[in-house]
Image 1 (cartoon, rainbow, N blue to C red):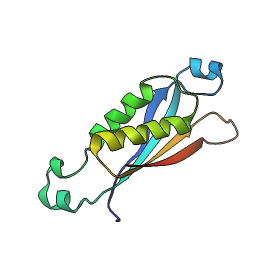
Image 2: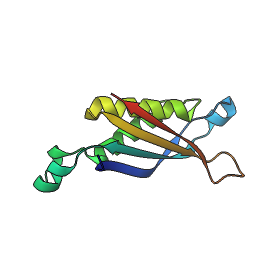
Image 3: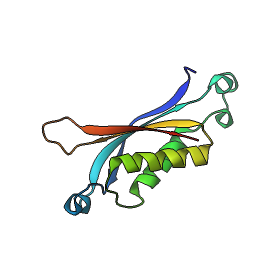
Image 4: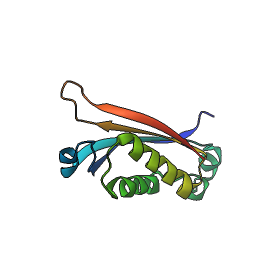
Length: 116
């Protein structure tokens, strides 16, 4: 399936890090999602009910990410994926998170695919 809904670089401020000192400060992460889904019906009907609202997905991602401090971005990506699957009844979601913690790198990150 080539159709997909995606969100690129959703900016969220979170408390995340293995070290307790790292979790004390809010850190900016960029979150990307990709939801494979047929968009053929929505492309014909122009009805939001025939697709998944990326606005609503963005709100869920933000809520999950800000809910509590975490140690690992892998864990956060998995939580986001599971929540998106549960709420929007999709079969699969790919979540990528970029974190700006290694000075020598533009960013570091993970990509986790969650399945229903």
